[in-house]
Length: 114
Image (cartoon, rainbow, N blue to C red; front, side):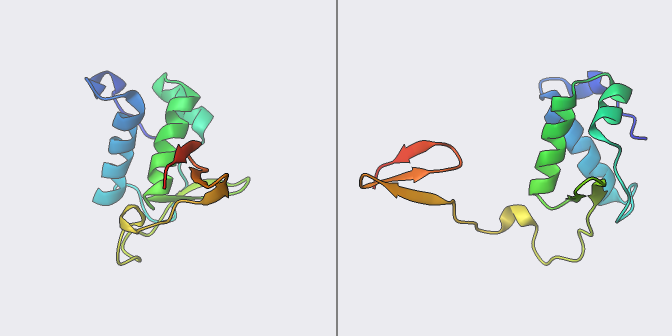
């Protein structure tokens, strides 16, 4: 089980501090590839923080390719040495749809002027 002193977060948000701690453990090899991470509820209870905080940290790690999820199984550490470039550095196009001559970004629900 991960044990981090959340009082050391300082000016950082709790989710960002948790994200940095888990990322550091993955990169340093303290957590092995394919190892299952604790469930969001168990980790939140163990650290005395909100489940939403853990969800946000896991979401950031997932977006950057440090972990992956399997439906109804949980989160697992990804093989970070297998990819040439981290997922966060890949260029992705944002999904957009046309409405009344303006571009609308589906992700942020904002209208984008052309």
